Length: 167
Image (cartoon, rainbow, N blue to C red; front, top):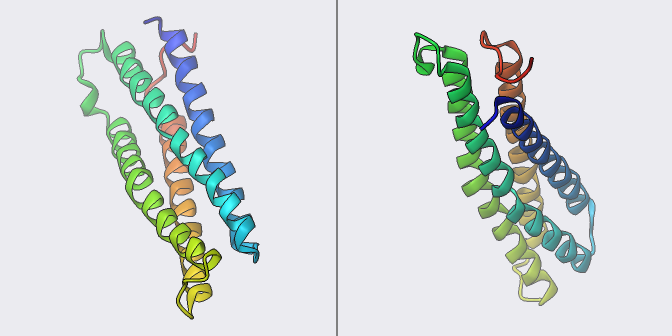
C-alpha cells in the first residue's frame, strides 16, 4: 500500500473517531440535562447507533497504523518496538479501544435500562438519582476517552519518528 494513501486513510480514521467521540459527548450532555424520559429514550437510541459505528474508525486506525509502521520502519536497522513513543502510542490506543469497547457500552446499557423502566413506570424510587450517577460516569468516560485521544495525538505529533508519505 502506498505510504501517502495509507497515511491519508489513517488521518481520515482519526477524524472519524474524533467526530464520533465529540458527537457522543454532545449527545451525552444533552441526555444528562433532559428531564423527559421519552426524549431520553430517543437520545439514547441515537447514542447507541453512533456507538455501533465506532468499530469502523477503530479498525481503519488499526490497519492503517500497522501499514504506517511497516512503511516507516521497513528499511530501518532498528525494529519498530525500540521506539518508545510508538510503543506508548500503541499501548494508549489499546487501552482506549478496550475502554471504549467494554466500559462505555456497559454504562450506556445500564442507564438506558433504567430510563426504560422509568418510561414503563417500573423503576425504583431512587431512579433519578441512579440516572444522575450514570450520567456522571458517562461524562467521566468521555473525558477519559478524550484524554486518551489527546495522548495519542501528542505522541504522534511530538514523537521522534516521521510519518511515511508526508513528502
